[in-house]
Amino acid sequence: MPYKSISDLSDSVKKHLPKHAQEIYIEAFNNAWEEYADPKKRKLGGSREEAAHRVAWSAVKKQYSKGEDGNWHKSHPI
Image 1: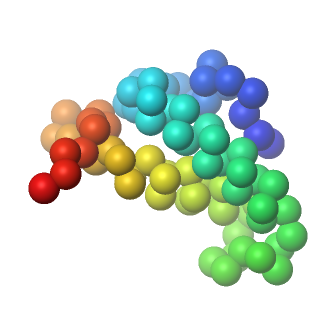
Image 2 (image 1 turned 90 degrees about the vertical axis):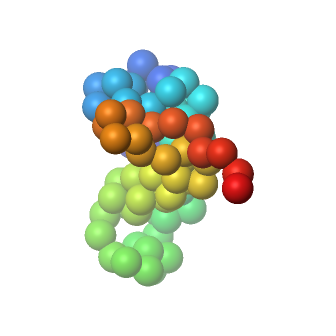
């Protein structure tokens, strides 16, 4: 189900992602939730929720990377 606010995210996401990354996650998840309502559009199969989470994490990984401390940090361009 789509998220209404950051407070609706799981504790593990809120604990490890900075606020900006949480905002990216929510926006990507909610967009994917709508886009992948039709199971035929899900290339990897799985549930609508699984597809939306995959898209959300992919969006976060475009700007953030997981550090050795287990938290996500803004990636720096090379």
